[in-house]
Image 1 (cartoon, helix red, strand yellow):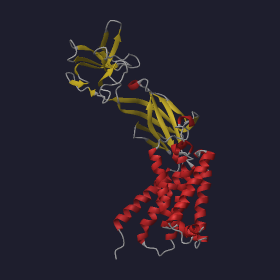
Image 2 (image 1 turned 45 degrees about the vertical axis):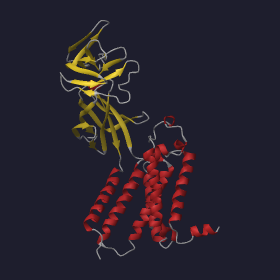
Image 3 (image 1 turned 90 degrees about the vertical axis):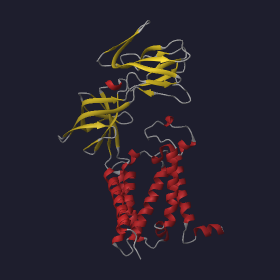
Image 4 (image 1 turned 135 degrees about the vertical axis):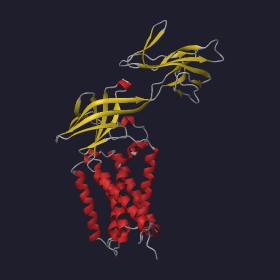
Length: 420
């Protein structure tokens, strides 16, 4: 009883800060066990606007009407801030150490552990994480408002930029998740598409349409490996080796075999029967890459010579048997870059031509169009491009907060601390 009085006697210190932060996290875990993860779409417009407005108005009312209240004063102090940040950091570390799944991922795909019920595999939509974020936001808001009661100076500009910027970025990220749309669209070369699918397969008509003018894939040069005929694994198993083709006449050492490149056909027709394999140059859809190689090994009575190909959707793959246990094979060539040359149309009549690549999206009418995938079964001959379309109306709020943070950091760097 005496210890309880010492802990909660005024003024509250760091101990109370850790108790409150841990209590909020515990309340979130209890909600998690009973309700499961938060579904962001349940808090889309206008619910998120109402929640945000009530939260800000509540902070202002507490600041002006309860300015002498002990709890309000404590919430604006470092004694509440530091424990809240440390508990929040603990959850962020857990999020970084556990695999994360989207809210649309079926529950059965998640690991069947207690951590799944605790929401750790969907941390950003777990009750504990969201409640801690709002608790941190409240502390940040009270700390910022507290500064307005003190004599103002131009040197406080950096403080306000940093704190208000962080408040906007965090609040915008929390409230905006309910309005974010993330859709995929498959477009065939020469066609126009305006329908996209969400993660559950529901089809939506969009205010933007995409015409795929051309789809191009650039591949790296082929590689050669030596595989185990029985397991198919690349040898040596403890340290698999692969060598990229550079030029005819090149030699390479793989798993104790000396391999010499005799010929290279980038577009070939590979035809095999029970007796032989025929490889001829042929510029056609579905042509495969082929290398003619000679393999020598001290254990072989004579060199082994023949064609190796990774095949395509038209022609089968081809390996060269070294002996009963091993073969030379060509893995599927790695994609260097794939580009969609598109024309995008909007409802307002605006038209825009662009090249969309991975890490080179197109922004138009609040939509960001990313190069997502292609028809992998056809490889470099794919005529279908898969786009991901993302719309986040709160992104401008988040960016405004980030720009304010950067401006505040720049201001503090230039102005520096006040010199005595």
